[in-house]
Length: 236
Image 1: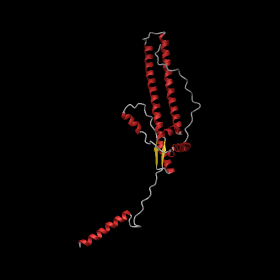
Image 2: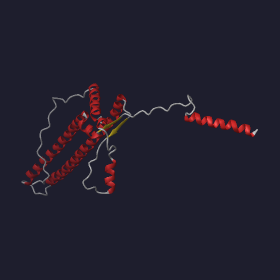
Image 3: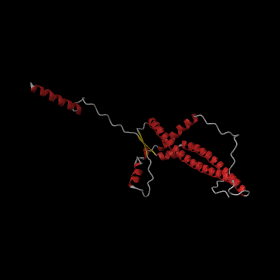
Image 4: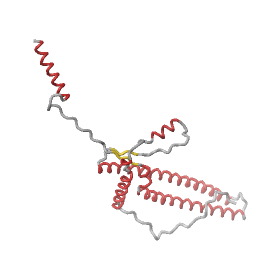
């Protein structure tokens, strides 16, 4: 009885192996052929320099900084006016007269205010530049995906060779620099930088044309008079 069970069991094992390996004709499924990936490489640094939106965002930042500069100039003109008033009173009163002391205190407050506003303006400029780069990078991620889907790409790589320091500060610093380059070699035909840049600019201009335009400046608005040049010196 045991021998009768062993023979059919061995037959089933051999037949199963034959089916798996494709030995028996017409029984094994053919393995699907490997489909090559369509890969593109883009130089993000080039796109940062040539993306149209960068020019528009930088213009917005320039206008915002000009507004801050005008406010700073106005405070500076107030400082110059206070200094002149102090000089005029010093010809008539003692230097410790209450009127002069009060004006000097006001002058110091204005100087402190001006310094704080200048620091604020510099910081606003720095943050504005960072925000512009962030906007460009987010657009690159979005439009690169659309470009890949539209053109049948499976993978888009970013190629940004780092500017290595002539003398790295440390081993860790050097390793960090070289780790920032994800692509070390690629065939030139894989470079899609220009195509993606043109694609991004085209979509940006289309979206920009659809967006409502902001109201222009009021031509009847009074212009701020040009104040005196900055002077950090003390009142004489």
